[in-house]
Length: 122
Image (cartoon, rainbow, N blue to C red; front, side, top):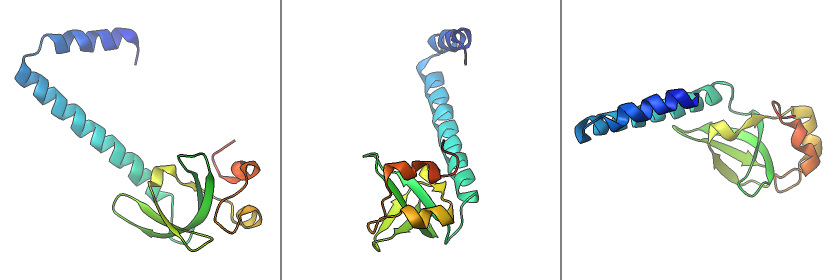
């Protein structure tokens, strides 16, 4: 979105009364929730139970595992040490089976050089 569009939106918002602002706020919130739900649904659609996946934790650690089940909002992934992680499906990337098995450590993590094994990452 360009700056002219944002300025036009700002000008429109400044002319609204409090009740109209509440309505716009609800519309924005609803659109945000719809967009997030759509992204999650698209991510879930490309995944399957038993599929090898990987993701990067908040601490920057690459973790790999196998999808155990799907929840309403999240996916449960079993890693090599038997622990289960509950992960947002938008964070998961399919992992190439052949290469995943050779790089995975006992605790389910993989070395930084294995990052490129995740499909969609370069």
